[in-house]
Image 1 (tube, rainbow, N blue to C red):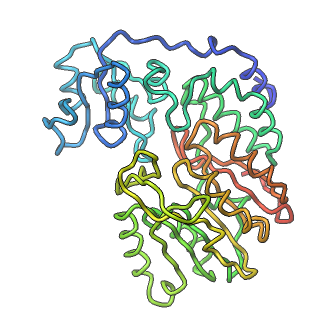
Image 2 (cartoon, rainbow, N blue to C red):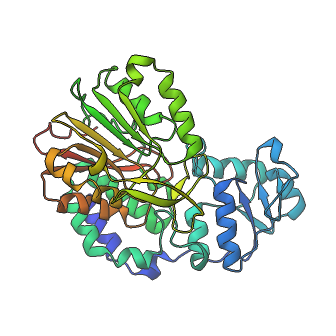
Image 3 (cartoon, helix red, strand yellow):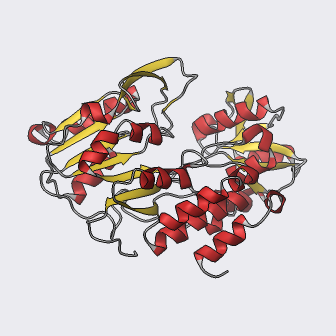
Length: 386
């Protein structure tokens, strides 16, 4: 269809009706994936007056159990019980199972139709939009001027191609359009070079230490300090055990904070799940400490790399680091997929700080997840297409 800019104009030149091509199925709905996401979507569907008939799941230990009033069955059992008058909706966002693989698996085993999470949302928009990075096409197109501006400030061709691919996917629910993921996550070749031996890695959303492991491999073990934040109690315990396993000398340079990152220091409502979905949420009944990076990180001239993956709180965290960013211009890796506008709002926010960043995008996950915006000081080596 031509260059990325040509495709961008084609996408933004259409009307919302051009993208609302999915029709209500008129068939019963079976949710494939009886986990945290499946339960969350079931709640939203029910609030919108939609009642699925069962969960399908391949976990043997779940079979025959009831979850939120729905029986959990193997996909083949669902097909045998309900015939052809139903459609599977994949309620799994997991690196271990891409949607296209789940779709092929279910079709091969049952012969039934399969909806992706985004297709499900487009089928029942009143119940499910907005959700994560997904929103109604009409709402996306309302931001056309911001989308064009964000596209134009990206620093390399690959970033512009990936930007348009994610936009195209969100408008059409065609998973085949998504870019292949780059590896390793947070250290893509051609963008993030090896840092100095006394560098500081600030890990916001440290989870169980997965990004810390990547950092240590990238640096061949050479670093000045790591400052890590993880708000979920169970994740934090796993993280602390990992740090202890590194040995006393390495662990002494790693500073762990049990809390979230935001625009001020205090506390915030937090929903503990013990997995990657743990997040700050205004309706959460629990609370956790909240830190502004400006109050915690004392760089003293060292090179700094900050990773933000904090479930939609990225812009608040950046607000709480304004002084640090202006004083040090650290390299940044900022998740840009937790909210519908993050694709364009995160790059625009970083650009409008006007402190001399080159901005790039890289896809580091499947199914539209783990899209990262990199902000690199302008004097660092230019991005190399990879």
